Picture 1 (cartoon, rainbow, N blue to C red):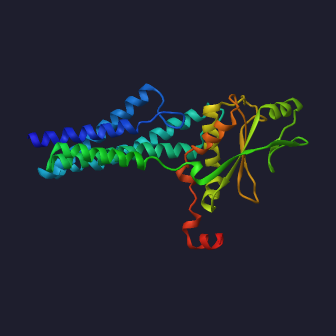
Picture 2: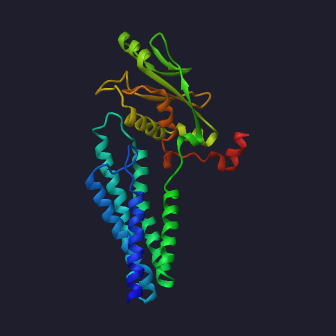
Picture 3: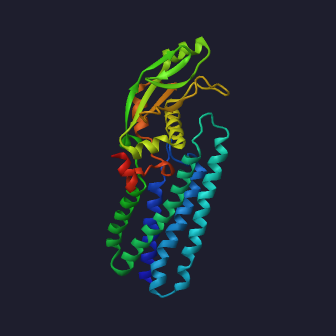
Length: 296
């Protein structure tokens, strides 16, 4: 009995610690309030418990107990729906929305994290049951490192070059370098843009990156992250100061325009480099045979 208890306790502790470490909260991640923490930590504890009891149940053997893993998978799929619905509701009151692609990516991540918790708890429990709990600590550490690496993802700075762009007007047409952004009718607004506006050029490194940056969802994610940190002077129904990202249709790079509360160009470029690449917008052109041939 002591052997079972040690395996279960070690597995639950390892899984819960894994979930706690993966529960990040900043301008890109969710939740950002105490009840959200409590909800996801409770679900992480349940996931850790399910993973921890699986190996002792098989060793007993009690195969019926393992069927609870299938029920857990169904419940964790509901977490994705819960996060999607919550964030979609919050979008209705945002001046600069995340966009559906960003929301779907966040929802998938929350579902996947619970599966990683189950695997961490299961591996730690197995090592504690068949060997010693000291070895289980090493196994838990390796699983947690693997989980954090797996959830890291890629960023815009890895697939594109971020450079300073020059803002100018051709009559009333706002441009960043040679990319047309929008028409600005009011003279006072044009003067404000020239004083406080910032322009950025985002150049894809290859065709996969170009396809990723083409996606409207990825552009919305870039703008949302930038505005979340530097702020924006856009107001309700105010379109002329709204941050926008437009494509240079012949060369494939993006031009970003922003009038921020904190007009720091260097930080703006660093923020863009750290924007996550949205999973649903990730380009894979060069992985196909014809895509490689066309690129050549």
